[in-house]
Image 1 (cartoon, one colour):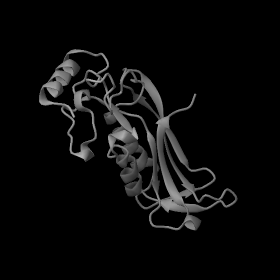
Image 2 (cartoon, helix red, strand yellow):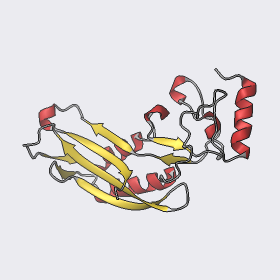
Image 3 (spheres, one colour):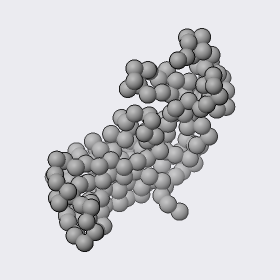
Length: 183
């Protein structure tokens, strides 16, 4: 466990340098982006998934087919200032390849599931805090009673949320995925 003087020293380092922030044992702090800056900023991710969920997915329901799903690509600003192609996808799965099921999802479910990616514990690696931006000094799991000091610049690493909605496997479940576009 870090002592108060160690915490203050790490905070001072993070505010004055852009080097990787390490624990007293030489390890990168959990939640630190280290040198990965080619992921979208949290604000860009939030604006894009809000657009996707409110324009591409109807509030009254959009039919998603297991065979094709709904995919859209956005060009978002990354932590390094460059643009990255970022994919948002809603798909349907039932675990059985031979069946082609379809089901309705709505914009509220879409917003909730993409928003959940930023609410997960930091160990799930859905997002990180850029080094040298103020938040990386204590970028650790808030769910274990430790707070992140300062906000810092948050980058979204992506991930997948499953929304089973209490249905059985036979009825299928939705998968909400956000990721860098494969080149």
